Image (cartoon, rainbow, N blue to C red; front, side):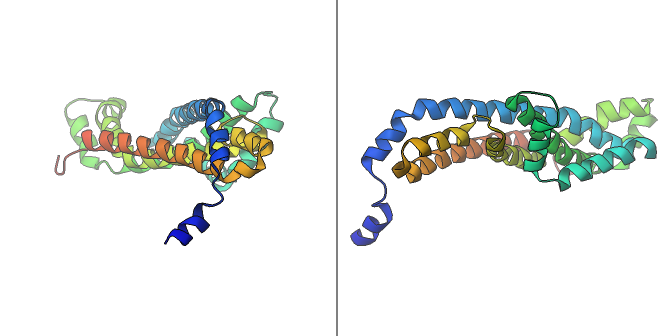
Length: 229
């Protein structure tokens, strides 16, 4: 057993771990950018995706068809291509803004389907009941359908949040200094510490993902619509 442990952990040198810990603040700056990029991209995805989902469900052919086509194109295009397109084609001049735009619009395409499914899961009887008490169609959607749909969309949103969080690492391709980009800088400085840096950064991503999932699990259970209600 001791021989196996030696073979597995022999590459992990104390000096290299010290190098990682000495640069923890530098990696922390990348972590901050990763969190900000994730939150802003998810927010942009929600701002675009929720109305788009509602249009697909309640809009006419002239509005729903273009939304559906754009969403299909974004979901079918590799994220790396979207980021490169946003950074080099549009005169943005900022890798940070291009990353938000690329990640946000890609997320919006998936959030559209999350919210579309949540809206369609609300039985038609809810709409009929709301109209029967004098609500207009718009009022029924706003005050009866949407609150229930938002609660039912939490599990899908949880999965999308995790995906966007991990996909921020692809912003490395356009030079944005998020967590993975900064870890690469450390690889260049000390090639013997590559494994240690990878383990350290992987642990950070795991903590972020695990913490976010637990928080959204609590939110989902807290606002879950009881069966039969």
